Image (tube, rainbow, N blue to C red; front, side):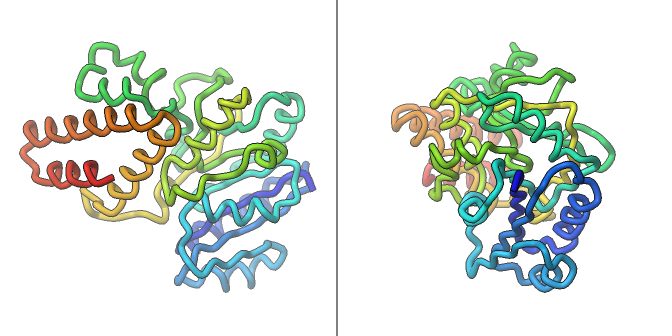
Amino acid sequence: MQVSIIIVNYNTKDLVEQCIKSIYNHVSSCLFEIIVVDNCSVDGSQDLIRLKFPNVILIQSELNLGFGRANNLGINIAKGRYVFLLNSDTYLIDDAISSFMTYMDKHNDIACCGAELIDATAKSQISFGNFPSVFEAFSELGFFLLYKKYFKRHLASAVINYDIKEKDVDYICGADMFIRKSVLDKIGAFDPDFFLYFEETELCFRFHKMGYISRLLPFIRIVHLEGGSQKTNESFNYNKIRIFTRSRAIFFRKCYGDFRAMTAKILYVLQNLILFLAKGKVDYLRIVKIIINS
């Protein structure tokens, strides 16, 4: 087995069907298996997969484990030399998987690579990022306006690809992580303390500490219909904000220690107080409470 493709699904029946079909339609140059980890969906996803894709390995979780822990279930049984973590709200437009494998076979120092993510209209989406930092949090108080280009490329924790060059990056977006299995066997998979958000960032942080490279390959493109399982009409989705804020705090504590984690928390509180004063929305005060409790 060359590549184990792992898809985590949570109530995205139509999207996961589209994703799996795109794999079978486009991947022809490598030996692969597809593993779907279902996070206790109630939309008929499991029955659809069993009926339409009998060759797909289906892992049914009795709980919604979140992103990292669910992927770990797939990684634990993966037989491939590489694992390709692919969001259910993505789909392939060519044989990207074989392109990843060919590239990684020639670059043994790379632990993880990813494509340029685009939307259905071919507009670039967030594909990678820099590790979150106290300097980024400080800059977001408004100081980034003094160095906007530098901030977007070298400080922002979420980055839309800006040129056609291959580039070493801090982390690859979790929507499409092509990872060398031997590296995961060596340093471990996702940290189970994360439910959603920042788990791929922390994993790539460990890659970096061990001397491995994460690289963006813009000549490979994958469509990402971002947020397919989390759509909401609310302008402030407090549950999403709560999960995001908690995961960010966990990342800072694990990767940088308590002092920098507390410094970043203070800066994020200041950000939202400034937004409250500027816009007058009480929602920002609620976010301040969420940050303080994270």
